[in-house]
Length: 303
Ligand code: MN
Ligand code: MN
Image (tube, rainbow, N blue to C red; front, top):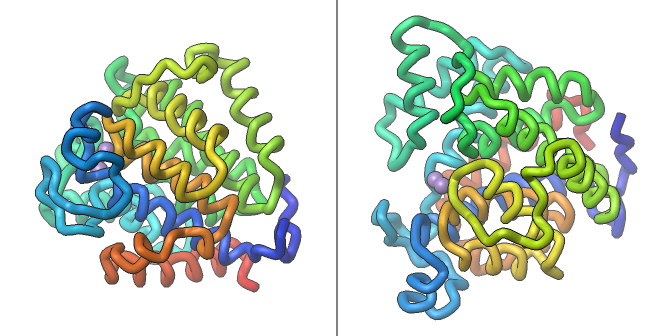
């Protein structure tokens, strides 16, 4: 059970931390998406150090536009709101609705999982060796908030949510560890507590070892976790953490989103640079702010 001090450490309240995690996630997505799939060298040639939301990239985005990462989180959060809690069938319908809305991008495993649901109505993907991408892990934040104070429910709902498209033990382990770490930070706990969760994952599954950092930042969930942990534990602010992660390229939007989630949970929404906050698509920011209040209410954690 995670205890939630009323004001959190350093006087940052729970709502500020949840907003920090969720908006931090979207900011990382919008910052990283224009350099998704580029190498570090390509980014340097094009942008020097990327430090603003420039738009463009392979998706030809507007500056501040988010992609599938944030949109799938919002779809999951909407499903939770509509159902008044966790309901996998309702979540499946919301993911399908998003899929039909012709999103700007969608990962292969997510596409395959939603197409399977459309075909046969099944809510769980069969185990597949190829399902170790980061697509289920990236969209789990709303469940981490909904279940604050109930670790058992968090684990159970998370596995159901993930298995809708991704059924792989590495994806499961990553979703549980990143979620557990986010929840610990939302509770105002120290970096050493967060570090112990990372170390616990590595001792269970050596594959996730991130020291020395292997410098792989693809959409493979092991690369994602190593990259996100490396930047999170080797940076000194929200901004530094995000700049480090997106300038590595690869799956820059997803890695940026997850790093932004952790740093935002730790530092609160006040730590997000204003130039990023102001550029983030306004409807997305509004939807996140509304959803955070709904999730906290359902979690019984409204202040
Ligand atoms: Mn994306
Ligand atoms: Mn991505």
